[in-house]
Amino acid sequence: EVQLVESGGGLVQAGGSLRLSCAASGFINDDYVIGWIRQAPGKEREAVSCISSTDGLTYYADSVKGRFTISSDNVKNTAYLQMNSLKPEDTAVYYCAGDPGGSSCHRMLLFDSWGQGTQVTVSS
Image 1 (tube, rainbow, N blue to C red):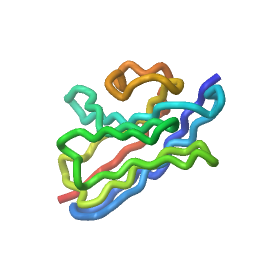
Image 2: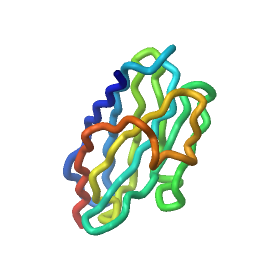
Image 3: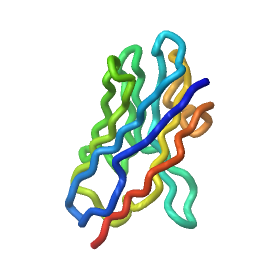
C-alpha cells in the first residue's frame, strides 16, 4: 500500500519561505512520480510542481516558476517543495500525490495516491 505523508506547512509573511516534505512509502522499487497540488478555498485544484524519481524530470506551474523548487531524496524516498518569495495568493492546502514510476507529471491531478494535505497560509 502506497502512503504519502506531508509536513512543513504553516503561517508565514509575504516574502517568506517554507519547505514542504512528502514522505513516500510502498512504491515498487522506490520508483515514483510525485506531484504537489494546491487548493485554495472556493477554487479548483491547481497542479503546482512535479518530479520523477527515475530521471529527475521536473514540472512547474507558471505561477510558481522561479520561486518554488522541487527535489527528491531517493534514499529517504522523500520529495520536497522549497517555496520562496511567498505571496498571499499562494495560500492553500497543499497535497502531495504520487504514481508509480513511468507515469507522467501531465496526469498529476489524476495520480492514484494522495496525502492528507498541509495548510500554507501567507499573510500580507
